Image (cartoon, rainbow, N blue to C red; front, side, top):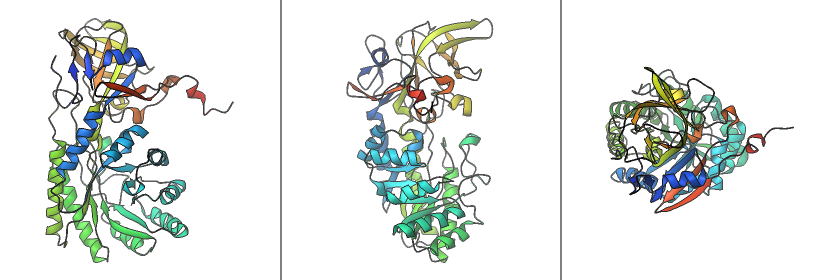
Length: 435
């Protein structure tokens, strides 16, 4: 079987025994050793994506930063890897910031986002000296400024702008449209800038915008960058020194062989060119420093979810359901977004596809179907189903629905495999309960 490029990890291949292998490790052997469901991450793929995006920005005429969004998947091991690759980090909660601190991530390379940061989170951000706080609303300005003053800190901030651009993606993934909970609209951003400029404890360094995720075309980025620079020009007239621009990211990845091929680093390169050009056209003496957020494009294809088949149920003239031991609690995306995936039988990679099957989860919901249709060899109980492109927004959104423990996580690299998260136990599920 040929493994589709851009869907499976870079190191994926089919072993002589007909098994799926990644990073030099046999996934059938790993599933036997660590149990299922099991998430396997390929370290080489993550490093390759990070380096590709950094290289894509190399020609930009000012300082650049490629940021990893912790919300895609936050764990100490992956934050350490991101730090080693010279990435910045976007966090949106005290939990993500705490994990970053434990991982030793340099605080000056961290940006704290969020549309409703708590008092404790603002104090934590100041205490840990995060590099940037991205301000989302007027109320946040006063709260942050008062705490920065009390702490004797001058905090660098960006204003989040809602550019009014509707990206061609799922409605739930749009973050820059007119009707959005994020950021300042054009009628408010001037007042926000004046409020920040009036508070000596805040250092207004620039603007941030984000229009969504799973975006594979340049047009919405071009529209957003133009509108952000129009706002930057307006704010500069108020006396602000616009030194930084973050036009977001959210570049698309392929989930199935039929999905369009998306060149994420190529999009980033064009975004950088458009930022430099827009800066010149709007009369800025020098281009601002640039930060991009590739989103899932950094990690999604590095991950594979492994499930064990428990039963095969044929509904004549309707559908055949292949039930696995995971589902919506470790991957909510098909239920929440209608996300579509492909799958293979990791233990039978050389067998020909016989028919179309549905991969159903184990949870007590009729909507718990991971894949509605996928062609593969006819599965039997005990087979190992591998779902690629599982590296982002699976574990980060995982739950203990039906009181089922969450999966273990293994990282593979050059024939070695290390456990980075053990499987939860039933006792783990009760650790927070007060009896």
